[in-house]
Length: 282
Image (cartoon, rainbow, N blue to C red; front, top):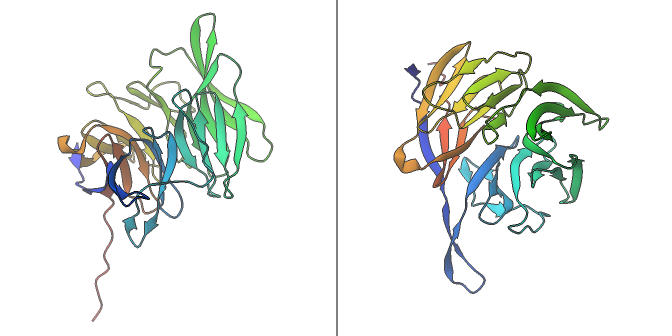
């Protein structure tokens, strides 16, 4: 596999040194288990250490330290949140306790968008370019788990079944790829599918992928333990390597410059897309 050798660097350490109200220097630990990027390239993370969604503002090429977004509710260990998404209007969506899709609007108001039936749960959530929500629902029927991919229409509130998925043993490795602007991809264990196909688009036999996303051009990106891969015109390329000193990767996202953002248990990384440089005319 050809290595494109995109530059990778740490943009934020997970240990943030801050000064509290008593002018004491303390360490704040973030555990960014999920992330998304808005149209201004601000990064939103779920900090599992504090059960909050936090924003890192992108200003003049630099990122601020994470701060809890306005209006975010208080959670404790009995409730948990997952799968942060920022839609095209800047609203923030997430899954609460695998049961509800919630939204915080631009005024910090908390809204409930969708709730699944008892004994069902939501496994993954993405938003398309029309602000429709697409998510995987897990249903327990006669002691078996079955799955479906469903779409919640932004304009009408109607829920449409896009596809039923046969029973899978990979309950903890079932994800949709963010940015479904060209194709909708989903991952089951070591297999990646397109929505309209029942046979795998890709199968990884040597190493199981950790997460998937798409860039703004619809190319599929796949996160592994030690590298990131891009599928471009049906060909696979390694974008960048993830070193042992970077920690264990969690999730991947792509910003609106085409750069790749990766969270690990130690740092937040950025893998830079090469820029075209125009030569000066003399």
